[in-house]
Length: 420
Ligand SMILES: Cc1cc2nc3c(=O)[nH]c(=O)nc-3n(C[C@H](O)[C@H](O)[C@H](O)COP(=O)(O)OP(=O)(O)OC[C@H]3O[C@@H](n4cnc5c(N)ncnc54)[C@H](O)[C@@H]3O)c2cc1C
Ligand code: SF4
Image (cartoon, rainbow, N blue to C red; front, side, top):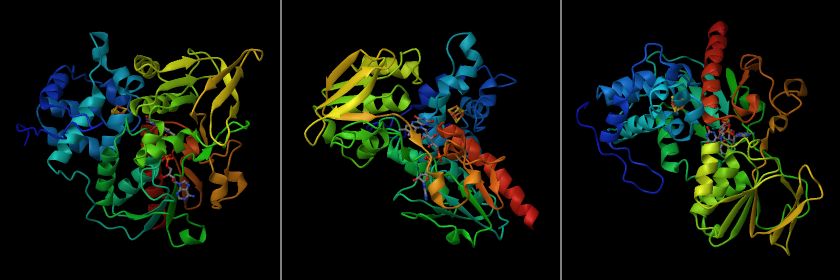
């Protein structure tokens, strides 16, 4: 197999095809560092040094195995990781010219895995007679489920939505992460025998029969500003806005004026999505300066190149319209006498998400901090309950959720082994 690399996906929308030639050329630039700083900088331990070495020697099966064994969401991470601040930032080749494109090589290996129908996640022959529940089907829970199922445990996931993936499926913009990529990684986890229960909000009693419970419910509360007109038709939170595109509804932005409020990566994603799907004008409005914005500067530049504009130092004070959005009023964030009114058909508030852990009804207030996040000591909350991902560490990234899931798995297995 190593010498006949398959031509993989067609170049359909968003599914970038990486040719074997490009992958081989890129892998050939790797300096094969002894201490591999790239691998040390991957939160999930995906071990890029090892899989790049395999690609370099045309052992694509070995590369795919390394990725999948270390990171059950390797295909997704290859698309959405902020590589330029993690593995690629650490790459030694940066000192000579530019970093190895690790994300691209990871995508290539996973595309080859799919093209050949490789099955790189395997269940242990030794079955453990223990049942574990995962609440939520986001990346943290999916990782716990995959790792525990691999180790022979009986795992059930309870998810309130109709599909698995959490913010992968309902948050991250489809232009960045195609649904097919999400579905493929999740399919590998389903093949391990993990049971998925959708449209399912569990109670404490439902969880009585499980030996351990992992809570990975993320941040699903909306942080919308308390201003006039926030509920007008055409006013969206970022997640509600992006969810429409996952449902296949993109026509609602065509030829429209779209204003996105926020300065993070999510705001940029919403703006680029609106632009890609034919909005007439897209403007990001952020309350501080560009230098202070948390969004990735490379992504901002990409947005500007597409014709998206940015207005800084302005905060929204009202959304106006007769039933639906017609304009948004802003005032200076630092200088309150400044003001600005922008015509808009759609306004998107990319102003963050909050935790709803308190409403789960699973534990008392002493286990919830002042931000509504779950207090977990080394991923353990209390007794058989464990937690991880955004609901514990606040808004981070997919690869950090995978890391949290792997750490929780170790703690859960230790707990279950101690009980034996
Ligand atoms: C719009 C947006 C764009 C992003 N873009 C990126 C990106 O480009 N790159 C990146 O690395 N990260 C990105 N992130 C961050 C990333 O998506 C999160 O850090 C990650 O998904 C957190 O994983 P999680 O498993 O902790 O939670 P989530 O992904 O939020 O999953 C939690 C799951 O729990 C379910 N749930 C909640 N309550 C219950 C309940 N009571 N019962 C049952 N199920 C429940 C939810 O429905 C959800 O499926 C983005 C986030 C957002 C919001
Ligand atoms: S999982 Fe993400 S951070 Fe880790 S090696 Fe892959 S692209 Fe880099």
